[in-house]
Length: 317
Image (cartoon, rainbow, N blue to C red):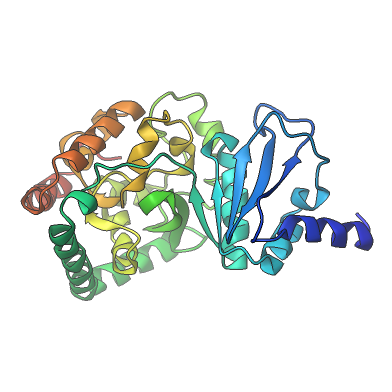
């Protein structure tokens, strides 16, 4: 791609935030990469699945560096992307948005049944408790966290923490933080290991998990850094399961309503089912039930119930 073509395509890509304008990309779609359009609406860039709009493909979008450069120059403040475009493309756009300082959200149906809409005052109390308790736990457990970080560093080469895209409040993508329990090439081998597994992508015999990682997972010690996500406001102490992209893209349109909720470190599925229930839609129904019947007292009970469940290591891997 020469400099003139690149400049022209960059101008088309960044668009104008004041007008609705759409272009079609990927003239020759594959099963993994369906065609899509870009549409500018005020300060938002909408990335949608489409089979109808016929426009030339922008080669700038084939290059991650060029995509980041285009987003850097774009006046849009956030990107909304269709989950139907698939995990690989979602991750690519999420990485580019992270590098360019833009927020990225999944385009999902709204949900009027969320607790923050039905009980706004009590929900506000929950958020204050989330921040306060998470900050206190980070201080109290800091010796344990430092010890575990040292063990991960000694046990195997690679970073101490594992950061992965998850779906947060209103479909916003964020990086969840965990202690690394696998080899450094785990993400690249994910689909090779999981194959066509129909439910949640969890395997007890996952060959990517290190011996130390298996022990940490059994007692949920790898999840302690998620307290940082809670302090940041990306997660709650108690809430629905934080869906990974490879699980979120397989949800039904009705099931996607649950993605409006802020996810939690623990919750109804983590306490009552854990790895014994791996059906995606069934787990989603549990989460929707939690949201529809939510009370602050229920959260407190789930927190208390989580302690013996974690100490026993029951159903975790």
